[in-house]
Length: 136
Ligand SMILES: Nc1ncnc2c1ncn2[C@@H]1O[C@H](COP(=O)(O)OP(=O)(O)OP(=O)(O)O)[C@@H](O)[C@H]1O
Ligand SMILES: [Mg+2]
Image (cartoon, rainbow, N blue to C red):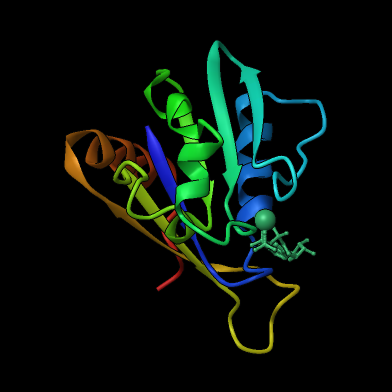
């Protein structure tokens, strides 16, 4: 499973991953991978690989670092700044766009979630069925 997290600096990508990992059962620290490139969390029998490619100057750095191996390892790959590793990065099953609504930075974020392919659509259907609809 590959999840792309799109959004400006401070849009809430790391915070969303932290919440997702907490929900999955992670009780230890969830650090930003900005400097390490990847943080690994093994939780609830799943391998989560959390990436941040912000510091890449060239997309080739993704291959040079051998990070493509994580994407064929059967885990869940959560990627901040995926555009920095294009065109080498595998396509997203789920793409999440985060943005700060005007004037309410401390109140929350707006997320648009897109699914691609059967795996992504199955995942998104699960999210929809387990979430509370917004007020009309
Ligand atoms: N849903 C939210 N509601 C309120 N504050 C939030 C929310 N999500 C993130 N924040 C706050 O916004 C700030 C930036 O969040 P975060 O580090 O997750 O952004 P980011 O998108 O990962 O940034 P970067 O591109 O630098 O990695 C933090 O102070 C965080 O607490
Ligand atoms: Mg971040």
